[in-house]
Length: 423
Ligand code: NAP
Ligand code: G4F
Image 1: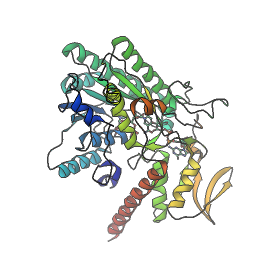
Image 2 (image 1 turned 120 degrees about the vertical axis):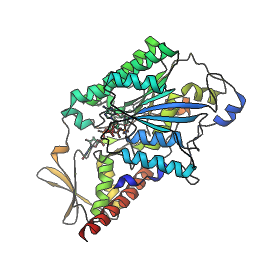
Image 3 (image 1 turned 45 degrees about the vertical axis):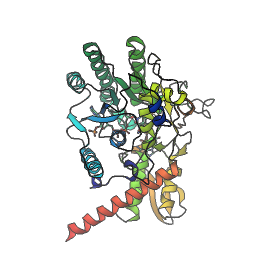
Image 4 (image 1 turned 135 degrees about the horizontal axis):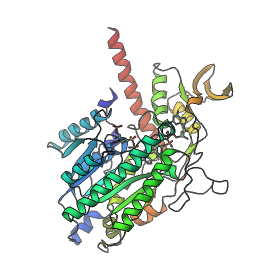
């Protein structure tokens, strides 16, 4: 039912600032560079388009307020049973209503693990830009499904790169590829490292099959870039959330749980490790960073007013807010914002629980503890800030407020449906 609700941050209108790449309009007027078909169409292919980042990127590329020098046609790869398909369809219909015309969104049913499907799709779509978001993204699930995780996260990228390479040989077309890497690759830090911010050269120390699959893909990006001079790059992204985050991830599990507890349709929250710290940003900021990275020579040219050197190799960037917070603080703050006041942290059978007087509102359930945990992640975004002018605009406070407000709406709808069902 929540699929009918679009979060505020997804749509750009007069009151929400559209993503502007600094100075691009002035630069467009001054330079005419052949490589950039300024004002012409660009074709973007998004794998994982039904996921959080896929939906935010689609909304941005198809918004008339997105200040990029291209008009986008968006293609997306969708698994037939994706539960998030309705929200994508709702987004398309909303954008068309807003703009009073059709937007160019085409879906292709398939799977990135199928090399024939990827070859055929990339050859028929002939994308200018690919964004590879498709992945088995849940760290805890990767302990139970290591082989599947490696298949989707690593072999999926192999299939995409091979198809893009053959497209460039067959049609002399170069396609730029953005791949989504993760801060999980940094993994467990030593005591000496634990206070340092994690930048591009911070060592990898993976603690899950998910992290291993992403490290393998990270090196695959470097391989295709150095051996075939492909325009491929990656962002090492720290955690980013939104009302569209799947509820199996901790922030959304908390905001949805708190909203339902407030309305009396859930008794308590069951969670895992309360002491892990994460650098939480907003997905809307992150997808703007992904576009900038995939168009990095254009953005560097605009910023230096130097035109574009298309021989310049692509580079990888960390995207983060540089702020981090323990799960426990996120949980307590969410209950506080929802009007539950100060909660007491107690212990029962060796596990923590958060109580309001006699009432238990949240409790650690060992089934959510992981065999390998990453205790602390905090990123250093200084390279992308200084070279590409990206900066996180939405802080944790704004993120939490939006998620709680959205989840209260969802919970109220759920109540309404329950009431009606009784009639
Ligand atoms: P998400 O919401 O979990 O979405 C994952 C997407 O991948 C979904 O659209 C899913 O389709 C699709 N998918 C899964 N297996 C597939 C397959 N075999 N073939 C085709 N599509 C498949 O993830 P997200 O948060 O948007 O993250 C996007 C990317 O960024 C991922 O690669 C993730 O690892 C990476 N990343 C995310 C974060 C973060 O904090 N969000 C941080 C660092 C890196 P269904 O709808 O059918 O399930
Ligand atoms: O929300 P999480 O599941 O995200 P996690 O494991 O950090 O992974 C996310 O971010 C990565 C980037 O760093 C992405 F690459 C990845 O795809 C995904 O998007 O867990 C965050 C922390 C963990 O330490 C976990 O142990 O919260 C802890 N946690 C505590 N209770 C819980 C729970 N995590 C989940 N999912 N569910 C709980 O009940």
